Image (tube, rainbow over all chains, first blue to last red; front, side, top):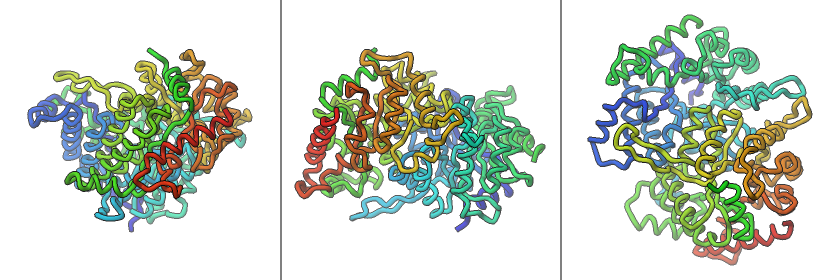
Length: 313
Length: 313
C-alpha cells in the first residue's frame, strides 16, 4: 500500500503547488442564491436546510478547484454546529472531494485516552464493522485520507490513529505549534533542558512516524505548524526532517509566502499550505465578482496563491 | 442565572453522591435483545440501526439511574463512530438525560483556534441562529450543561467556551492531568521553574474561572484530573481550590476511592467521579444478572460505587 506522504507529495507535484483549500463554510457568508435554491427545493428542517446549503456551497468550490489543487481540509466545527445534519454534510463533502481525486484532511483535532481514540481513528480513517454477531456490515464512515490530532494526552492517545493510518495507507497531522495568538501559553513553555513544549512535541511526532518513511522521504505522521510562527517553523523543520507539515495561518490569519518557506525542506517539499477564508470567501474581498461567481473567485484565489508561493519555492 | 458549579453541587447534595455515569456505549457489548428489537422495528440503514441501539441502551441506563446520580457524561467518540446517525443518537441521549433532570457533560475534548472554537462552543453550550437574513430560527444544538476542552492551544481557544458557558449558565472542564498511562509524555514535562506542564495548565484553568465563583465556592471552569494520578491530584487541588474536578479513571481504569479523595476539598466537595464501563456494562462482570437486566446491574453498580466513595468522603 502506498504511504500517505507519497500520495500527498505526488498530488502536489501533479498539480504544481502545495495548496490545501480549507472548506470552512459559514452560513452567514454563503451567497444568498444558494440558500434560496435550497429553501425552494424542499421542506427541510432548519438544520438540514443549513447542511444542504453548506454541501451545495462546498460542491461549487470543489468543482472550481479540484483540477488545480492537491488537497482540501474541511474543519468539522463548522459542520458540527448544525448537529447530526451538519455531520451528514461533512461526510458528503469528504465523499464528493474524494470522488474528484482530491486528498482529504479531516480537521477535527480529536484526542482521547487509547480505548476512546480507537473509536475516533476507526471513524475517521478506517472501516467499521457493525453488528458483528449477525447481519454484519463493514463500511467506512468518514473515510478521510488524514486527520488532525491533538496529542496533549501523549502517545497512547495517538497510537490508535497511527495504527489505523498504517493499516489503510492514510495519515495524521499532530498539533505541534498552532497558528493562533495564544498558542504560546502552553506550547512555548520552556523545559529545564532549554527546549520548548512545541519542540518536545515535534520530537515525539518525529519518533512516532520514524519507521514508515516513504519514497518521497517523508512519513505519514505529520505536524501542524502555524504560518504565523516562522522562527519556530525553522526549528521544527530542522528537528523533524522527515515529517510532513500541514501549515494553517496563511492569508487571512496573517502568514505570508516568506513566512511559510521554512516549513518546506531545501528542495521546497514536505509542506502543504492551507488557506480557508482567503479562498472560499474570496468573492467578498474584491469588486470583480458577484456572489454568483463565488466559485470562480475561489479558483482565481488559488491561482494567485500558487503564484505567491512559487516566488519562494 | 445560576452558576454551573452551584447547579452541579446542588445536584450532588440532592442525590447524596458525586457520581457521573459515563455513557460510552459499544455496540459489541450491548445486549442482543436490544439489537434484535431495533432490527425488527424498522428497515434502518446499518449506521441508523446502530444509532437506534445506542439510544435504546442509553435510555435503559438513564431510566435506571436518574433518580440516584447527579450527572451523566456521554463520550462523543462512541457515537461519532457511526457518523451523522451516531451524532443524532448523541443529541437524543443528551436531550433524554436532561428531560430526566440529569446534569449532562459532553465529553468531546474539543479544541481549536478562537474563530473555530466559537463554532464548537455555540454548538455544544449555546444556541444557534440559522438563516439570520430571512426565515431566522434560533435553536440549541447539543444543549449540554458542560463540555470537556483540550487547551493545548492556549487561552484564545478556550475563551469562546468560557464566554458561551457564562452566557447560558453552563460549564467546561479543561484537561489538566488525564488518566491514561502516557499522560506524562507532555503533561509531566518539567519547566525551568520546577513546575510541570499539568501544574501550569492547572494555574491557567484556575485563572480562567477566577471571576465567577458561585455560592458553593467553586467556579464554572473546571479541570479534568485522572483518578489514576492521586499525588498529582493533591498538588492540583491545592493549586486550584475553587475549581471543580471532573475525575475519570475510577474503576475499570484502576482508580480507587482512596485515589480520588484528593480531588475533593476538605469538606468532601468540588469533584465529580466518572465511571463508564464499570457501570453501564456491570451486567457482564457478575453472574447475578442476565443481559436483560443490564439496567438493573447499572443501578446496583451506582449504589455500590456510592457506598465505596462514602467511605472516604
